[in-house]
Length: 261
Image 1 (cartoon, helix red, strand yellow):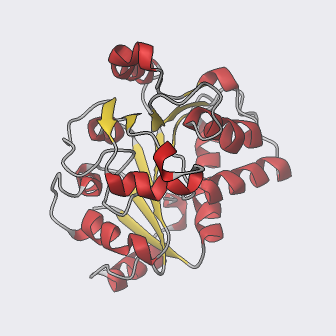
Image 2 (tube, helix red, strand yellow):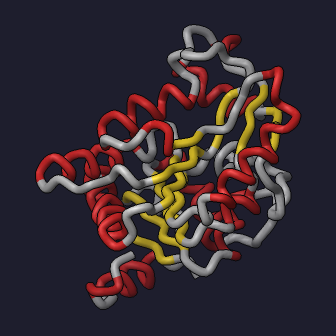
Image 3 (cartoon, helix red, strand yellow):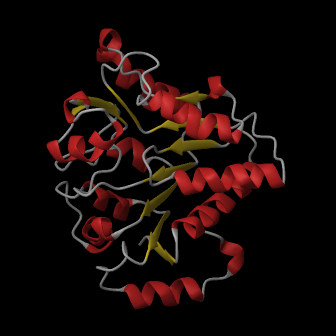
């Protein structure tokens, strides 16, 4: 069962997860991080950057793999996830750029890009900690409803709801790409620790389905129930539809501090 942690703010969530990431890097200098994009993980990256400013840590050996990338955006496009990772993660945290990888969304090499990415993750020894957000449809990465729990990195067609959610990052909705390359649910499940964050009432239904609903491809987020080490960090609004909310609060309040998340 996933560990559910309810916090009072995005900032608190970021500080909690960042402290865990820092401890991981302190213990393992070549930690492999799974990096999510979008607004959800930003509090984690901000808290990590602040931690490194206050108490510098050598992160030159840290490696990272982004969850996904749009297909067909021009190299250097402001909203390509390669650029997003560069400005929101690599630069603020002082990571080594050539140790941080993003799926290749170039059309001319697309056929082999998924297999290439899988080999790169395997060669790095796998992901130690994977940061995740969740979409309103329950998607993890860009694994839309119906995605196989055994799926690996591959090209997918974005659902209209996902394109609409991402339209705010583009000048017009028509500019949002129709295809992406994304780590599969099987790829994500191979990470040794999954940390799923969600904030806001619009994520409450997806969280309830992921944590307490049936394990079904119709709710890709429910794949977390098949993983041995999952931490779900929520604000009050995102946790509002959980049936066992009182138990989750009690369990977290009485957990030995040395166990971390």
